[in-house]
Image (cartoon, rainbow, N blue to C red; front, top):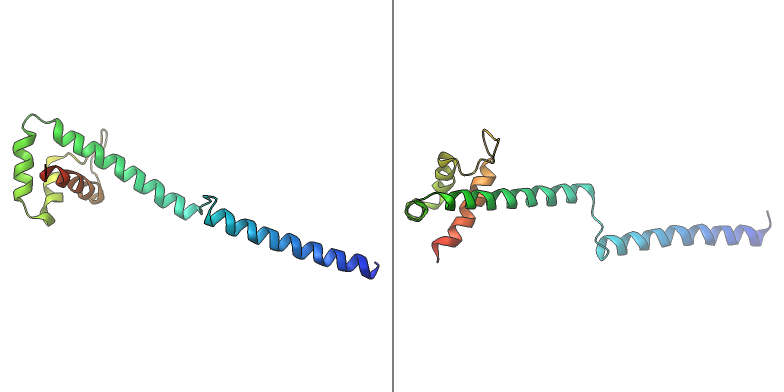
Length: 116
């Protein structure tokens, strides 16, 4: 191999490596690329938000929701999730038991209604 060919190969390989690194930096910083761990976290947060919205809707669908909302407001803030769990509003159709995170997110959504 000629020395000038070896030099061109060397700079070509370094150019490919640097180009790939720059493309990854731009992709993750501004291109919207994510790792699988980040995507799984975002998916779990989206599912939790949708289940919390369904929980709030189930709570508000009951006929005496205004009285129940006042009762919930009277309970201390750290016990409100337990009230939601006992009422069963945090369970999605077909579920036997929901997670605590759904009840807590539901309470956070209902607390916005306290202020109205």
